[in-house]
Image (cartoon, rainbow, N blue to C red; front, top):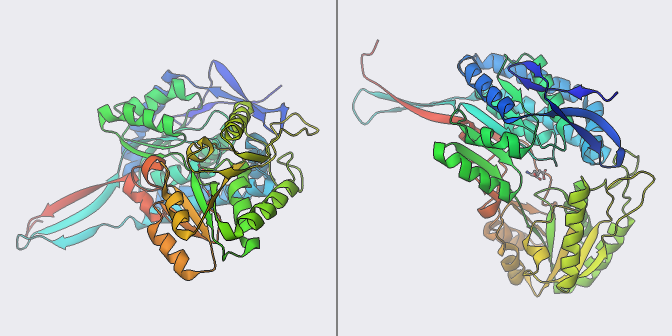
Length: 481
Ligand code: UN1
């Protein structure tokens, strides 16, 4: 019989009436386990449990918070092979990618364990003689954490870890497609010593669980990563209660390749940035903006490299690109390729692939001969699809790179320090990469974008404190006991 995993509310396992099978995208006959399909009343119970646990955790010693996160981190790191295997099996990343993501989650938990001990305030003389003013950071309160399917363990870690470090309590709703790593992480933190109700896991659909997690007057903040449409919906439901939001949404990230680029570096950066993790990253390099003098050589070399990539079962040795996450995502990728053809692009690759197991396999696709106004260069595809835009020179490349509704990550491949510096200065993205892929970021520095990509304070590193704390200013009169 398939095993079942319940929601975790107030420290207890809470079964649900319905259960959702967790299906392996590399082999759809493989069901990993069944996971609770939570209801809106489960979500209400979880918000209540988080509210009840808040004052105990908010006033807990930072040592206690640091210890829980550190113990959790150690277990995640110790179990990296097993959890990496689970991640690859439920999401479809290759084993090295999946194991890397698990280690990253462990490092994030460790980092924020340390941050719990570094929540220092400030002190300044008042303008009124003798008075002292202090500025301290207090927990925001009850925080809903809503995460996507493409990073099943790292994104939850980089929201939950700072939330807990600064004394908040959490209701966590992972994407329905990847409950496995979510459940493991919540269980690890529970066993690492979190008091009951401090972290609650509610698996279920956004439609049923989402309105409570974003619309409840008892929720003080929502940290979300996912689509622009869902993010905008969250803005609408949080506004009546003035709930604080942190929204990480789409990207349409440009990678500029200049004539003077090292061709091997350019091809490798493009390949990893566009097709790593099956292109299913909001930081993926989906627009390759290439100057005229290198365009033909770059496109030929990238096409060869892309076609040599081994696409297969995420857990097979030597697989370089795993499957697309599910059937509807695969259909969406194919729809965008059809539209790209209709609008005049030449599609290389992008065909469905047969493998020994029934999975959602798609060859990486490169659309050549596109302009920046075509649909494939405006909408986020979220799959192994990149488009090439030929430009005359650096000036045009920069203008095209910045001409997008999004603004998450951008990159340039060049040997010119002057060009790289100019690009870093004038790119209107939140993150700029020189001679490295637009995707793949460090965990101890801020993450986030501009315009339609992001809304609210930055995630990650020490900047995470801005979202997960509120500032208190206190005045102390002279001679106070
Ligand atoms: C990365 O590129 O390392 O959902 C992280 C996403 C992003 C995370 C990307 N929020 O793809």
